[in-house]
Image (tube, rainbow, N blue to C red; front, side, top):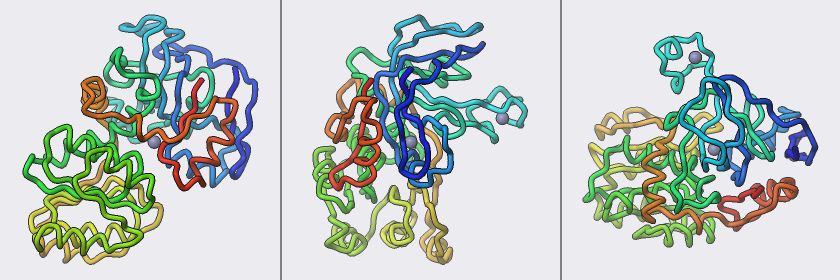
Length: 336
Ligand SMILES: [Zn+2]
Ligand SMILES: [Zn+2]
């Protein structure tokens, strides 16, 4: 099969390699679309996982079904999460493999989906593999994973319609959160970001107010918009010291700060700022797939405007350069 293989720093090459072999408990998927994630970019820039096939945001058709796997037939349109649980930790022993503490991830520890076929170990319907509704395209299907992080964040934040919610960071996860907040009926959603194309997408995603963080001070703009009170819930999706500081500053007394962005660097902070305001800080790892697909099927969430570029699999090197460097890139997608 054709596969995009990492060779080193910013070096992805197309290769012909053997197809993955189906194993008991697994399925092989014929990949139809695969998005490039921020974490793929991180590995691409580091370049130290030579030989790896990246990609964990995918959709495709069930192609081969391993022994012991029920609930699927060849040709089912699906998306999913590829991981190998260790089988030995506390969680695995309870049968809660999704919480495995030594989990190996597709596209990080073993071959991901930027190839014609991908193996998904541990295939379980509605736990690791999800059937796509007919109305959800393969491209949208490949965005279920990143948007599911948004659905999960909104669920954990327990938002109410009258809450003022601020989303800092207008990448696909922040934009997904904006759409999910509108889908669940939140009346006031404020989005802050830095790139023109992403701010436009935030508007199209339903944000009621946009802050161009390259031009104005996010914290001051939110304080002004909330008449000095601050926001009920802040979704911090940028993962930077400055945006972390802003989140604590703009959350109202008793408010919530939802930590969604992946911080590559440590931050310094004064916990007393959170204590003095009775803040709740919530960390997010994981996604909620089924609600995300329901929002997509009903049209309440539409990721089509968030897919800024598509490339055929053969052009994976160009696709990575685009996701990494093009100022107008939101989600770059490979199509197979
Ligand atoms: Zn990702
Ligand atoms: Zn485990």
